[in-house]
Image (cartoon, rainbow, N blue to C red; front, side):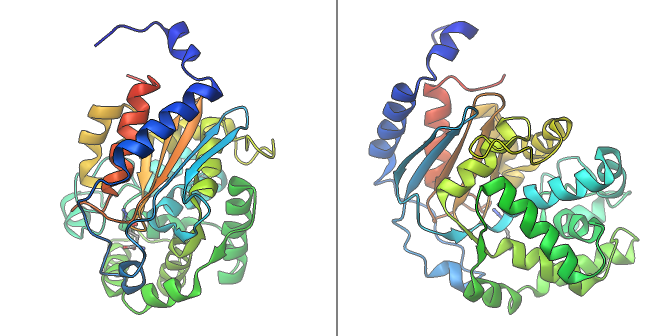
Length: 319
Ligand code: DON
């Protein structure tokens, strides 16, 4: 592997070269097969598995797009990152570590065992258990007030107001019994911090946001740019929170496949069962890729391959 100095690495990040690498990735992987759409949420099973989009948002505000980047799909678990940002902004990083947990679970995203095995009942905010607990940890007076906080912060991250896909929200609400069970289990251990049905409902609603690949690139770009939205230039969260949020992505962003992901890419990332994945190169750029078919951990097959290729070509690996 050829050695590359830091200065040479930065030279790779011209708009022209990023566009070339996006195109190479697109051509290389557009016909990649393998994986299957999520089927435990009926709405997701029906999305066209051939859709494929790549978007980059640079820390200085350029948004580059290729493929189906305007198609709006379920944000799903990627929403966990932004509800964590809200809870961390309100409560501080220490409270997240103490009351939710920040270690890797090494388990599937909806694992009950992860809760059972840890003596503190600590679960990372990016798995279902920790994300629902994080939602319950957001301070607000009632469900409507909490939703408007989530919605406002999401809007500031995305540089536009996202809409909930009502059909997806209904589909998830009708089938989220397992999540409700996890929330009750955490509650039984004193690790849930608000009304259970309210937090599970708001968690489910946030997972049902429709986001495009472009939206996700801008949201992740804000994390790459110390909490300042690179497009609107608005300060969305305190800069000091970004490393903590990115650390949870580094430990748990792709669930039980996170170790392997970091081994290959050295970047924090987050997937959703809608088929999106975001990856963040701090201070440089963020990449979002969308392709619905998933591997057995619930991560998009094609998005992982695309990101690995681009991160390698652009020499973005932090490690
Ligand atoms: O709660 C769930 O199961 C879904 N709403 C989100 C799961 C998810 O996106 C896991 N991701 N890769």
